Amino acid sequence: MHLLLCLAAAASAFRAPGRPRSSARVGAKLQREDHLALPEADLILVDGDNVRGKTAFRLSAKSLEQQMETFSETRDCVLYVDHGMSAECLAPRDALRVVFAGPDQSADDCIARDVGYLVHHRPDLTVAVVTSDSGLIARCRKAARARGRAGRLDIVGSVRFSETTLRVDAAPAAADRAPAASDTHVAVAKALSVATEKASLRRVRNKRVTTRKSRKAAPPSRAFSEATANLAAATARGLAATPVAAPDAALNDVIEDGATAEQLEAAIYAAGGGVQGREQTWERCVRAAKLHATLRAATTAENGPDSTPGRSPHAVLDDLGAFVNGLASNRTLAREAARAPVLRRRRRAPAKKTARPLFPSPTPASSSKTWPSGWPSDATVVERGDHAFLLDEVLPGLKIALVSDTHGFEPDDVPFAGDLLIHAGDFWLDSNSAANREAQMKFDAWLARQDFTRKIVVRGNHDPMRVAFPRSNATFVTGRTALRVGDSSVYCVPHGASAGLKNNRKALAALAAADILVTHAPPRGLLDTTYQGLHAGSKPLRDAAAVACGENAPKLWVCGHIHEAAGGARVALGGPTPTFLVNAGAANPGRAKRLDRGVVGVGVAAPGGGAGGA
Image (cartoon, rainbow, N blue to C red):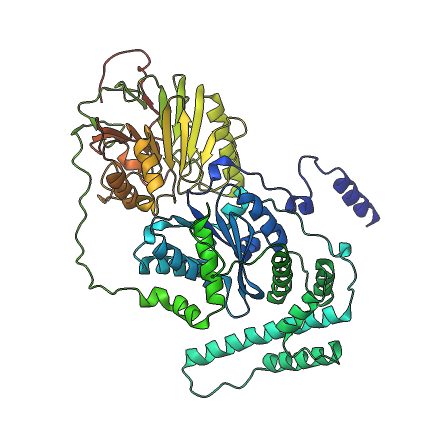
């Protein structure tokens, strides 16, 4: 036994230096990646507690507020915090507002309310909400639809926001906390913990009664009775002279008496909180109240009569601050604002569903054995082995290689050197994690072997959100992104980024101005026919192209996703010349088991010459 313990100690001492310990990994800084850039929006609303929850509460409310101050140097933003001393909007920076929900509502209520206000009073505004709460997302979209402006709303996941914008450090160990300075603080913390438990039990009990449709009040549960008794006992033990009848008021008194953040953290720990990776409701109440008091002392709260909305460079934030603080002082207005999305929504008779026309008929295609959809009959395409070479000068001066849907299989090396290599998504292998890692490393090595100045990989529906390509230095795109390659512009719309595209003016302008459009899925109606004869392309991409492309349109559109529809087509989207659409899917029809095709070369002659066609 002693020998085994010695061997285990030796193994831990010789841990590989490249792999940090788990505690260090938890506190490691999340590196920012340019390809995870946030969508373009005029105003960003951040659900603070949801973002912190996605970091396992390693990010404190104070740290989040400080980092939002730095973030506000580039974007106008609003941070929403649950609880607080009262419902109030504070302005710690010109481009940042912090909204505390107060004791009578939640941050979700405030965000849904403010989304409705913004899309109604500022119809030209594009708003992005940072949250991963599905319930809040549904409420925000409902509020936007009630005003007829659903297209002005973008949703950004909390994980994506924290990875691209925030720095997350490890939480301090319990031993680093100072001892509690006063029994009063501990008593208030315990009273808050019992009170929140009591409120939670009441909500559960009322929900069960409503579900059963019982008119008789259900008897209180044993846990509910114990929580009530514990609250009375904590009150008697903690503050004999001043009973903690209202824990929220007692907390405000403690903070106003000058309790420091360190004292309150010590009280939370002494009351049974402070568990790493977990934060209970009563802990958030204490921390939010302290943050509220700190910000209130450092800045002046906006209020309706004294503010001058519309006169500063941040007029939208001024208007929103006056609106929020006006509601805080008028309960009638607050109730009307909470019901506004329902009251202002007009019910319409259900419209008769009609089939939306597909794209204008493309140029007739000639058949090809290797590429199921063939190639346009007016295009000069040479096939050599599994590769295809488009000789037309779609983009003069650029040599481009296109491929998609390799699904963990390694394609043949590209038989030429060029300026740009594009992979339109689905490079991931549908297997266990070890096989995926090995396939991804081989894919990175394959990319590194190809002699191209720039390499772009767009995320497909099978690909993860975070992948590094250290050997090839390829750009992995997971959000709508505009890139430059020489004198040409490339606009990428990976899987999951096409929702709401047709209503985003900035994104539509970037799409129309691009020389090359890269999407994972094809548009509905073009190069999207499955082996079952169904159109499986993307409706949002089809609609966005129809709206954006007028005088200008991309010269080349690269996609994949539908393996059995690989090939090319010319389609008149707008602009002086038709757009050449290429489905570069390389895998076999259906579930990927092999690669049936190679790459598509654009602007380069086929090896060995010849004029053979498709």
